[in-house]
Image: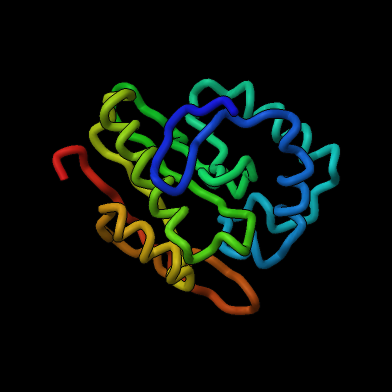
Length: 176
Protein backbone atom coordinates (compact mmCIF):
# COMPACT_ATOMS: atom_id res chain seq x y z
CA UNK A 1 0.00 0.00 0.00
CA UNK A 2 1.19 3.50 -0.84
CA UNK A 3 1.07 5.07 2.65
CA UNK A 4 1.10 8.87 2.75
CA UNK A 5 0.13 9.49 6.39
CA UNK A 6 -0.40 6.96 9.18
CA UNK A 7 -2.15 7.07 12.52
CA UNK A 8 -3.10 4.47 15.11
CA UNK A 9 -6.38 3.49 13.41
CA UNK A 10 -6.07 4.65 9.80
CA UNK A 11 -3.62 5.00 6.96
CA UNK A 12 -4.08 7.73 4.37
CA UNK A 13 -2.96 6.89 0.86
CA UNK A 14 -3.33 8.16 -2.67
CA UNK A 15 -6.47 7.16 -4.51
CA UNK A 16 -6.24 4.80 -7.49
CA UNK A 17 -8.47 4.00 -10.44
CA UNK A 18 -8.90 0.57 -8.83
CA UNK A 19 -10.97 2.34 -6.13
CA UNK A 20 -13.73 3.05 -8.66
CA UNK A 21 -16.10 0.26 -7.61
CA UNK A 22 -15.99 1.37 -3.96
CA UNK A 23 -16.83 4.98 -4.87
CA UNK A 24 -19.61 3.93 -7.23
CA UNK A 25 -21.16 1.82 -4.47
CA UNK A 26 -20.86 4.57 -1.87
CA UNK A 27 -22.21 7.34 -4.09
CA UNK A 28 -25.26 5.23 -4.93
CA UNK A 29 -26.09 4.77 -1.23
CA UNK A 30 -28.48 7.55 -0.15
CA UNK A 31 -27.55 7.13 3.52
CA UNK A 32 -23.83 7.57 2.79
CA UNK A 33 -24.30 10.77 0.75
CA UNK A 34 -27.13 12.20 2.84
CA UNK A 35 -25.04 15.07 4.18
CA UNK A 36 -22.93 15.68 1.10
CA UNK A 37 -23.42 19.25 0.06
CA UNK A 38 -24.88 18.47 -3.33
CA UNK A 39 -22.41 16.55 -5.44
CA UNK A 40 -23.84 13.08 -4.93
CA UNK A 41 -27.53 13.86 -4.48
CA UNK A 42 -28.39 12.65 -7.98
CA UNK A 43 -27.63 9.18 -9.35
CA UNK A 44 -24.29 8.81 -11.11
CA UNK A 45 -23.46 6.16 -13.65
CA UNK A 46 -20.31 4.12 -13.26
CA UNK A 47 -18.82 6.04 -16.23
CA UNK A 48 -19.59 9.40 -14.59
CA UNK A 49 -18.05 8.19 -11.34
CA UNK A 50 -14.96 7.06 -13.26
CA UNK A 51 -14.66 10.49 -14.90
CA UNK A 52 -14.97 12.14 -11.47
CA UNK A 53 -12.26 9.86 -10.07
CA UNK A 54 -9.92 10.57 -12.99
CA UNK A 55 -10.40 14.32 -12.53
CA UNK A 56 -9.83 13.96 -8.80
CA UNK A 57 -6.59 12.06 -9.38
CA UNK A 58 -5.34 14.78 -11.73
CA UNK A 59 -6.27 17.75 -9.51
CA UNK A 60 -3.04 18.89 -7.90
CA UNK A 61 -4.67 21.93 -6.28
CA UNK A 62 -6.61 19.73 -3.87
CA UNK A 63 -5.20 17.28 -1.35
CA UNK A 64 -7.24 14.10 -1.74
CA UNK A 65 -6.40 10.93 0.19
CA UNK A 66 -8.02 7.54 0.63
CA UNK A 67 -8.83 6.52 4.20
CA UNK A 68 -7.90 2.91 4.95
CA UNK A 69 -8.27 0.94 8.18
CA UNK A 70 -4.78 0.36 9.52
CA UNK A 71 -5.49 -3.31 10.23
CA UNK A 72 -6.11 -4.06 6.57
CA UNK A 73 -6.20 -2.67 3.09
CA UNK A 74 -9.93 -1.84 2.90
CA UNK A 75 -10.66 1.66 1.65
CA UNK A 76 -13.36 3.11 3.91
CA UNK A 77 -13.54 6.66 2.55
CA UNK A 78 -11.66 9.67 1.35
CA UNK A 79 -10.75 13.07 2.79
CA UNK A 80 -8.63 16.09 2.07
CA UNK A 81 -8.30 19.82 1.70
CA UNK A 82 -9.86 21.70 -1.22
CA UNK A 83 -9.79 25.37 -2.21
CA UNK A 84 -6.19 25.70 -1.03
CA UNK A 85 -5.14 29.34 -1.16
CA UNK A 86 -1.40 29.94 -0.95
CA UNK A 87 -2.05 33.68 -0.68
CA UNK A 88 -4.44 33.36 2.28
CA UNK A 89 -2.79 30.22 3.69
CA UNK A 90 -6.17 28.55 3.98
CA UNK A 91 -8.20 25.62 2.70
CA UNK A 92 -11.48 23.75 3.14
CA UNK A 93 -11.55 20.32 4.75
CA UNK A 94 -13.82 17.53 3.50
CA UNK A 95 -14.39 13.87 4.30
CA UNK A 96 -16.71 11.07 3.27
CA UNK A 97 -16.63 7.73 5.04
CA UNK A 98 -18.47 5.41 2.69
CA UNK A 99 -18.19 2.18 4.65
CA UNK A 100 -21.07 2.42 7.11
CA UNK A 101 -19.54 -0.30 9.31
CA UNK A 102 -16.71 2.16 10.04
CA UNK A 103 -18.96 4.96 11.30
CA UNK A 104 -18.68 5.97 14.95
CA UNK A 105 -15.35 4.23 15.55
CA UNK A 106 -13.00 7.23 15.50
CA UNK A 107 -11.68 6.71 11.96
CA UNK A 108 -13.06 10.04 10.78
CA UNK A 109 -11.66 11.91 13.76
CA UNK A 110 -8.19 10.46 13.25
CA UNK A 111 -8.21 11.06 9.49
CA UNK A 112 -9.26 14.65 10.18
CA UNK A 113 -6.46 15.15 12.71
CA UNK A 114 -3.83 13.70 10.35
CA UNK A 115 -4.89 15.86 7.42
CA UNK A 116 -5.20 19.03 9.51
CA UNK A 117 -1.70 18.48 10.92
CA UNK A 118 -0.35 17.93 7.41
CA UNK A 119 -2.12 21.08 6.20
CA UNK A 120 -0.46 23.17 8.88
CA UNK A 121 2.97 21.51 8.97
CA UNK A 122 3.56 20.75 5.28
CA UNK A 123 1.22 22.99 3.27
CA UNK A 124 1.92 26.03 5.47
CA UNK A 125 -1.77 26.73 6.00
CA UNK A 126 -2.92 29.00 8.80
CA UNK A 127 -6.67 28.31 8.65
CA UNK A 128 -8.71 25.27 7.65
CA UNK A 129 -12.48 25.57 7.52
CA UNK A 130 -15.42 23.32 6.76
CA UNK A 131 -19.19 23.35 6.58
CA UNK A 132 -21.31 20.61 8.09
CA UNK A 133 -25.04 19.97 8.18
CA UNK A 134 -26.59 20.77 11.54
CA UNK A 135 -28.23 17.32 11.40
CA UNK A 136 -24.87 15.55 11.04
CA UNK A 137 -24.23 15.17 14.76
CA UNK A 138 -21.56 12.49 14.25
CA UNK A 139 -19.60 14.76 11.92
CA UNK A 140 -19.89 17.73 14.30
CA UNK A 141 -18.57 15.59 17.18
CA UNK A 142 -15.65 14.31 15.08
CA UNK A 143 -14.70 17.81 13.93
CA UNK A 144 -14.92 19.17 17.48
CA UNK A 145 -12.72 16.33 18.79
CA UNK A 146 -10.21 17.19 16.04
CA UNK A 147 -10.04 20.79 17.28
CA UNK A 148 -12.47 22.64 15.00
CA UNK A 149 -14.59 25.42 16.50
CA UNK A 150 -17.95 26.67 15.35
CA UNK A 151 -17.71 30.16 13.92
CA UNK A 152 -21.07 30.67 12.28
CA UNK A 153 -24.32 29.32 10.95
CA UNK A 154 -25.65 29.50 7.41
CA UNK A 155 -29.38 29.49 8.13
CA UNK A 156 -31.59 27.13 6.10
CA UNK A 157 -28.72 26.56 3.65
CA UNK A 158 -29.62 22.91 2.96
CA UNK A 159 -32.81 21.23 1.88
CA UNK A 160 -32.98 17.50 2.57
CA UNK A 161 -35.83 15.09 3.11
CA UNK A 162 -38.44 17.82 2.72
CA UNK A 163 -37.06 20.25 5.29
CA UNK A 164 -34.53 23.06 5.45
CA UNK A 165 -31.69 22.91 7.90
CA UNK A 166 -28.62 24.93 8.76
CA UNK A 167 -25.02 24.50 7.74
CA UNK A 168 -22.52 25.08 10.50
CA UNK A 169 -19.26 26.79 9.60
CA UNK A 170 -16.31 25.52 11.62
CA UNK A 171 -12.60 26.25 11.47
CA UNK A 172 -9.28 25.54 13.10
CA UNK A 173 -6.25 27.83 13.14
CA UNK A 174 -2.65 26.67 13.23
CA UNK A 175 -1.95 28.22 16.68
CA UNK A 176 -4.83 26.20 18.13
